[in-house]
Image (cartoon, rainbow, N blue to C red; front, side):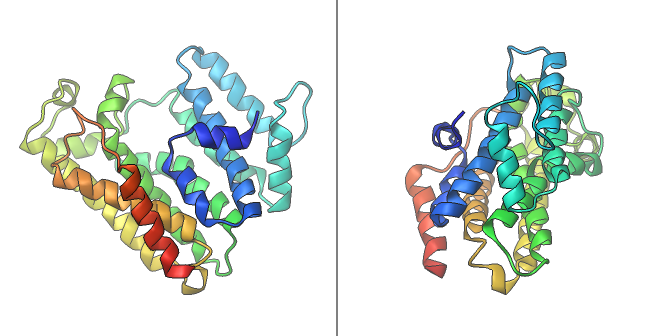
Length: 273
């Protein structure tokens, strides 16, 4: 398994942000990103039974702690990365636990329940990433947490239609009730004022997390967090696009084109290089 190949074949915005890093850190964050992709792909594999998915995720819980017979050849790369940056196994197990939630949870009653999921699959990724990026002020951890929540909420808004096809609704049930928009209406893909108000509410929540992240980023760590700030810029642009189009997420997929992404990457790089 080749971490660089996994990164190249992915269309994730995260991979684009690596351009801002030096060679060594870029190699290391690529290894970590590949780990995240491998874990996520296990949960998303439609050809695997849930029991097999759980078994494979459980294997990775063991592999991040100690060598095992017949382990993935990539596992040793992950452990070397963990040793280099003094990453506790619990940090990676948090991510595995978040991915595992998708195997049994299809609905979230409250945002507080959803927040646990967002923390595990996004904020926990951010907390590992900043260790690789390097930081001086421990307040940077709060930045990683808040930015992770912002990015994941943006993902949830963008993927409402796609997640429906997979039988998942991440929008909290309490929020649907707040705007008198039923789950049946969502299943039927009813686009109306209630749906738009619901999505505006979720977008406002995402923007609040973006604002908290910006406030939490220590001045002395701004340069080392350029990759994360590239991600933040791209996702803020994506959120703005959906807002301007009144959230047609039930019928279309949103993304920024290569030129738009390049512009945002360049703008962040120019601030520090």
